Amino acid sequence: MLHSTLPNSILPVAPSAEQINSTFEALSARTADQRRLSAKERIKRLDALYGEIWNRRDDLKVAMWEDFRKPAEEVDLTEIFVIKSEIKAVKKGVKRWMKPRRVTSGLALIGSASWIRPEAKGVVLIISPWNYPMQLVFRPLVAALAAGCTVVLKPSELTGKTSEIVAEIVAAVFPANEVSVVQGGVEEATHLLSLPFNHIYFTGSPAVGKIVMRAAAQHPCSVTLELGGKSPVIIDESAPVRATAKKIAWAKLSNAGQICVAPDYVFVPRHLELEFAKAFQIAMTELYPGDIETNKDYQRIVQDQHAKRLLDLVDDAVSKGAKLTYGGGGDANQCLVNPAILSDVPADSRIMEEEVFGPILPIIPYDTLDEVVEAVNSRPVPLALYIYSKRNRFVSQVLDRIQSGGASINNSVVHVSSNHLPFGGLGNSGIGSGHGEHGFKEFTHLRGVYEQRMKGAASLLMPPYTPRKTKVIDRLLRWL
Image 1 (tube, rainbow, N blue to C red):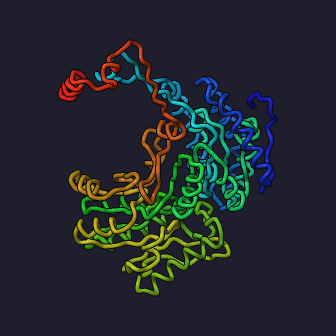
Image 2 (cartoon, rainbow, N blue to C red; image 1 turned 45 degrees about the vertical axis):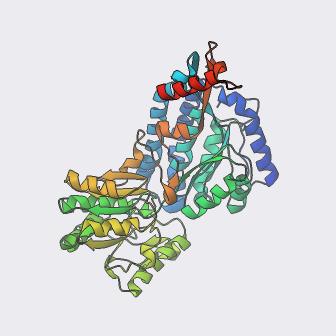
Image 3 (cartoon, rainbow, N blue to C red; image 1 turned 180 degrees about the vertical axis):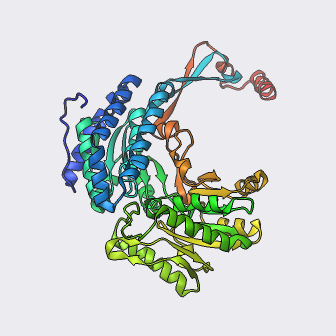
């Protein structure tokens, strides 16, 4: 627990507007002191955060199992390990990132000095989704703390058990005027968005991201939007089919497909379509053998209405002529959606228009790369792009011709775990970047500072403009 004049406390679930306002005011009042924290003091906060996460490790596993049957091993791998890795990377770099950096003033400003001061933006709001209900709360929090901000966390109401543990962890570590958690639903989120935060970091759907951006424009404040979209996979004929299918199956079925960068649909050379579909089916059964309903490693969809949406996507595609090559079905009441492979999927089916966000994979055969490029570029820019090929020329052609937030070659999803790569979208898939130093910069204002140290020659260029000054200006333009 960190020392403060304010006690650690947990706001009630769905707090009143007055309670939220009071919390915001306390955090705002603290921003000047928080901004001046040394690197050592910021690292102390990160260590305290991870210490409490480790203390509550078993509680987090129980909570996520109750929320949507997340396996304990995946809590360790995709939630706790990711935060530990992020904190380690930030601790290593934060002292260097915080330092003012000298820059040249240029010949026109001779006699001066210029430098850039990284400064915390102030009080920030982090709104996180349900699919990684601990990681996606605490990973941006680590960046905000490293930058010297005070923070309001708004975890998802759909994973309420985990949100309760998150609130308890925060209250055990931070005074209420440094970090506070607001639990609740749309009403609470809407009220938070009406407050004059200095930065908003939102992870979620493009539709809600637009609401966040409109709200931010009213103050105004800067935003980071980590959204989603239809992340395509493009397989070249040089890629080993079975190994490629195994990697894609793992990425597609992890978290039951509820990953913003999950492979959404796959382009396969036409003559390899059946071979790939068979290899993908084998890979799925290897990863999740036996009855999928009783397999403890296979996760549930977070809510029955989300499960129903996925089942409806399959029904819609099949009704329009798609073939259910493998799997399908489930029980929306039990939040269970079985893995499925679709082929011959019509372009006007809902599953080719909406982000899938579930364990259903459309496979699309292609004859030329031009077809693939045209199909992908006809949609909004995806958050991720996956290329499987042994040919550097093919990889370069795809990267040159298709934009994406990030890209991964001969693997899927794992690029998100890097603390050295920027993670973020472009256009409909997001704004800004997170992770490591890139996350630190999102919560930091880079203040430019100029100092006139010698008299300089600027006065020679001030009005009134005499013929002599006109000549000096002309020569200056030619010289620079």
